[in-house]
Image (cartoon, rainbow, N blue to C red; front, side, top):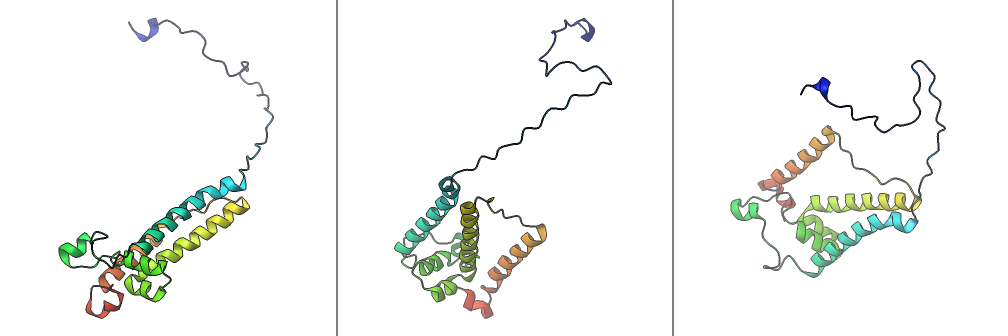
Length: 170
């Protein structure tokens, strides 16, 4: 059976009356979209949940001391090679930060403390925008910025493993 002998399925769903060729298409009146404004509590729910999760994580690390052996696993890179990764000392840093000891937190992992402050700034911005009804902030890194962040993390990891960078080691 070829394509020319297939039965015609009949007319399909019609979108509206047929318009003859060359005729002007009638304008459809534009209905303005009514923005659905969520309540303030609903807008604040997502950032509040993220803050609650971060607060719970800091509370747990603040309560369970990572300086005592057996509470947390050891970094696999450190255990296998003896090389400190960029995250080594992060739990000790979070523990000190949770107890308000900023000097000890910087001594354990300075990059993590910078991350805590970046996270706090992002969350503050998100909360203010959610409170005012604005859009949630977005993190969009251009490739050059992503490479720069990667380079900073790499330099931090290398320098903390060298003899002159022992101040960055936990």
